[in-house]
Image (cartoon, rainbow, N blue to C red; front, side, top):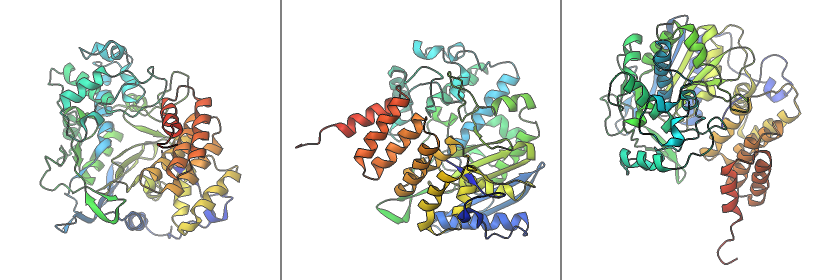
Length: 476
């Protein structure tokens, strides 16, 4: 699923050493402007807002393009964008405010706070919910984009089996955040569907942020778009429905400036003290001791020289904080699949003296200056470079994003590299198998799913995929 690479001092690969044509003698605002305009042109993003904060102040805030294509309505600083799963970071902050106040214990079972849960759910720690390591089934897909009411979908999830023992592996699941919202609301005597962001809005001065979806758009809400494979040159409007419990995980609308105020309030201690922030931004380990990629509501990005935390939403929004540098960057856009997180480290580099890009971030930045035909060759060259030491999580995430949006050949190159660099990872083999399947190589997909199972016998995804791939075809 995601990111990192190899630039700056001491790069061995000539293609990477050529980065970048951007004039680094320019001002930080000029660099940011150039990166944003390149990103929007490359990804064909209709509209966006970009904000950078540094040392307690908003130092860059601009709007770009169109909020609505049909009406030719420009994106402005007051346009609100749905931030999707960045809402989870707000829920993480809300949970840590309860921990800080002594009302919520991360190590207590959720059954201590929420009544009426199945026996298999009751003993799951709150920490497991916030780090997506609970093993619970997801109620949101059961809503089928609003065709099934929330109560029915929730009842179906309650009756479904737990996917794995808590802490054994990662499973991205909206049920986790619904339960956290229910717990906090009950602590305050509120209905369990009450959203959690209001206190943060007030403290940070976020006057334009609200909860909503396509059925309940605010007056200045940007239209969401996506490109369909059958009409790749025509961005199509997307409808989104977030039921009350799902709004613990998504459903928040905001502006770039409001996100800037929130980032400042997080880093200056108004929302959380230093101890609570450290807990929230520390990777939660699995039961085998290996570190996951998630803290509590936040991704903790593996960087060799600094703390970087962030969250993405809808494959079109991203917010990253560099707490020790006093810098934060948020990009809100209206194109699903735009993945603005791919350029945030580049932007941050303009505001953090001495920051160099590493791992997948540097590799992506270098590729931005290369012809598309060079992609596979540059990726393959990293196998031979001992200086290239990316995060498995970020490299895998990047490959998965390419796969999800139809760049199957590029995804195969990235995920092949991941499997080569992390030969003992069952997850890397599973991802590579999926890439081979997407590229039509059934035999290679089967081989790599089998390797994944040999490394990780509990991988039910590989078991299910093999059943489908190895099933006899009609007439055979």
